[in-house]
Length: 499
Image (tube, rainbow, N blue to C red):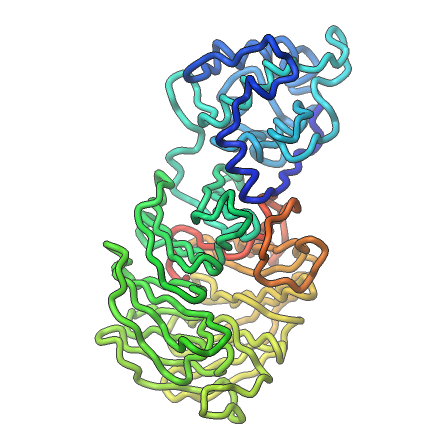
């Protein structure tokens, strides 16, 4: 039986190998040949399952004690999944847990996982699948794991979470209706080079039509169709594009620029329709911009500068700077900062009155009155707070604290800590909410290569990451971990309001 499927990540170079490899040439069965053309589920794959897996007492409709994995039909396998989610990721056999349990060749799956399949039970007594059979299953998955009518599972879902997997150059797509990982989308153009593009942040527009990925190491922003997952645009922005924030209609994107050298002190404004640079907004106090936010009334863009420790208030009507506010009174006006706060992320209250600012160095959230620039509240939180977010109903501000594996929940009415969600995951980073404010999703970097403080990975990793699901209505309780590729970081849930 399959007790647990663990998805492990991989370097971007391995992904390229998997996409281009000749399956018959690597088979341990030299006489086997994978049929030319598209593999048929009913003709080619289902007979393998029926003979070796979906037998009585194993993965058949009775389901016995096999974690709910039913291999007797395409629908039961691909739509129903099993106890902890999806056993197969369409177009990605390498990352599909089922392959890791039937396959020994790590050219096709990163590791061989226990228990080995088929299980040692009568009448087959654990006879391994022939390599030619495994090759058929792998080819079928890489072609989309379609049924015989050409349907790909979860092709028409509308409730999605897009999550960047930084150390794998992938964007994970999670179906938030059932918390299945349903796609892994390759991004950037560094696969096979030994370098990472490092997808740092993702934003989906309010219409759920497009999402945008900031490749902080490669220097590009890419635009993808949020339905077909095809790349439809790519813009070189230079330096280190950190996060992109969209206006209400999605036509304009404000791109923060995390240039740690302090040379390019700017925010770039992008025409998202044709992915061109519209204008650049510069100021000496925009040193290493990272966080940002378009206000709910679409009147302002707030740019948060990590090293300057300033919030720059920009009018969206003409892209002129209206105000620049320090995050504390002792921050110098020269744009070099005090080094005491290192603000990272900013979120805005529903009424657009207050901005919540996470400060990495001082381990606190500072609350800024957007109109007059005063700091109205200072709320101590955990160690190294990163991206924060206000729930769509305006009641809570969630603050993932990376170095103590917790999330602090701020009551936005009282400006006090309502709850600390402990052990949410290893190195929580990003957060977003479902539109009804029922669930929060927390990305967890998951201790890349044993280094708990590496922020932007330089090489690929074979260590999985997780995204935690929090039930807000059940007293902010964690209900699930969704396993995915390495180093989950940015997250955006449809619709994209608030990101």
